[in-house]
Length: 391
Length: 134
Ligand SMILES: [Zn+2]
Image (tube, rainbow over all chains, first blue to last red; front, side):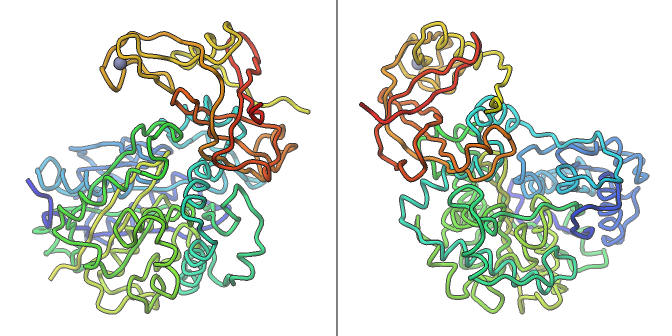
């Protein structure tokens, strides 16, 4: 069975992206979920499938707090930042096979407050499920001084920069494009704080080659989407956004970085060809790119994996305005993790839906018909979703 | 200097550390059936799927395949050392390990030859240090 064109994204919800929310992390998630259900023209009893965030709040709790009386399907997707985009494939499978009629995909966290709680805040005991990354970080990376993802990923980003003798121009172009797009987004954390190349160049290194402005912004936020069959979607309020195809991929080994035969081969290198084949599309059929941007250089590697450039060539691809609004492949039109906020890439999915509904406001890509979303997570897992405006 | 984080490991990771500390030199897991090195330690061989293996001493020299240069660390003991390099060392036998080093980041380069020495924190955990190859 090919999932292409069987399922659709019909509802989206999104909180603000803030540093230090007044709300409990559970409330953020539930607010986004209810907003997505309402946006879909549904009520909670219309939902019978739930994919919860990786941690923080369970399907059981989500159903009870929202008033979903009958959960017929639940699955957790634990691929770090690749989870939400991979979850779309799982949701599409569920509704296409009929094990559920409408699946709620949720993401949300206290990405800022967990590390830097407000003095007056009561700490939450709720944690993310760190999955295989927890073991690797504790046993392998932390004893060698590598506690943060920026440090761990720099183990192969250094190799990338050295192998292809990359200047910082490509990474800077990604950071500046995301920041420029965030200026058009009312919910972006970095709205009102434009970034210049001079400021980028002056920003301190966190872990070479990553400067401060190569790193995404920690935020408290939540997002949600509702997936149902395309047939049902056509009776709902918004023009459906069709799941044209997608895939996930895992590097080998996926549970640690340094013993991969090729340090630069990530999960998305396996996922991308699968996704394009299933959708019957190629890189040049895409109108909008929403690329997982935990770090700028990770974006460059993904663009190469997707076929937009040869290995080492993404820096040239992203310079000259290609990925900015008005360019051939506008990217991260919401500001991305780098400048809107870090919602594990479900915010990329939400933005893709807005683009394909033609409701993205000042960031709208004129006539957008097809969008591609990626996820990247844990130690290199990848996911891809190709979405299209229903004709 | 405040002490660096040392985890309580278990299972195969613990076996690797214990073998290395007991031998006083770096030991790596090797398939008893086909001879393929496995690292990090694995239950089954990815080549022949054998579950048989032992920890075998290696020469302890290798080549820098990549490295991280950290300017900030959440671990105060590491923050005192910043900026510091963490190396990915490909052993001459094939598998890769992480290593810390007294080398300054500017002295580190991909392709540089290094020798590894054992810093046993306990019977159950050793950290590898890389020195310039002699
Ligand atoms: Zn074997």
